[in-house]
Image (tube, rainbow, N blue to C red; front, side, top):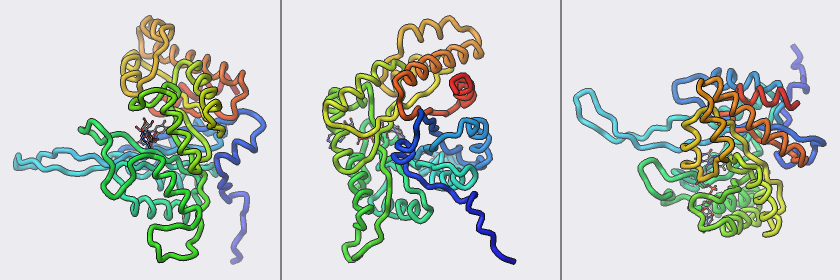
Length: 330
Ligand code: FAD
């Protein structure tokens, strides 16, 4: 029986920067988290299926480092064990590209990884035809106050960018690999409109960002924000300091009152007074979600007025708020 060359089903495999350049209007992208260990890939598809109505240009999949936890055995004694609660980033990316024919962007982190493990992960991605990565440092491990790099790993995201750019030039860790195959990764990095929590000030943080770009990163995706003015100021400051690549705004709906204090604490961001007041007036979960929907809609409409190339949504937890917002926008 002849094998059918059904090219309509071939994945597109485009780089994020090419997707941005090719688009004539604002495009949509999503970030998802792998499910907790024990759940099936179907939980990802159930989460994504309604959102696929909006034809996202790409979907990011986060990476979660392993944690050390104290486990109590049946006999009452305890032992430290290492567990990865949300494994599967690379597999999910391949599954998304295969099922939806949409580009996937795996996140890669420094935390917990040696350079050799990172190189092997990049080789896996390359072989799978996944040519996009978001290069991140990762946060401190649970129970640690500050980020501690793996002794054989990277300290900052810029070191990871350097390694990926090296591989794009055929440079592998083993110096006896001559004429190594060149990968072709499009590299995204993180940016913080209200500065990264550890940075002394915004300018220093952007200068650190600029090093990642100068080393070869192609675009920036931002931390979430609820006051668009922070994003506009950040974009201006980036341009002023010589960061001229796309800066993709990251948006996450708020859906309950607890997040009013939790999100500023975790991400070191401002929660606008008006949003706080509206959320505090809401006295049912549905009313809280309605406030979150309205605020996200307001943020998106304002960003769209400025003809941004892409809106990137953190879909964790409440994909239907994003669905409802997009339904009203597009
Ligand atoms: P870096 O760029 O290394 O910066 C970290 C801090 O060090 C900053 O304060 C910076 O100003 C400073 N710095 C940088 N270089 C230097 C230098 N050479 N000397 C001195 N200071 C320096 N975390 C995960 O674990 N998994 C994920 O999937 C994930 N996805 C994310 C996606 C986005 C869009 C964003 C914004 C964050 C994400 N994070 C994720 C969180 C991220 O890992 C943390 O915010 C982390 O604390 C910083 O990562 P970074 O890549 O920005 O680090």
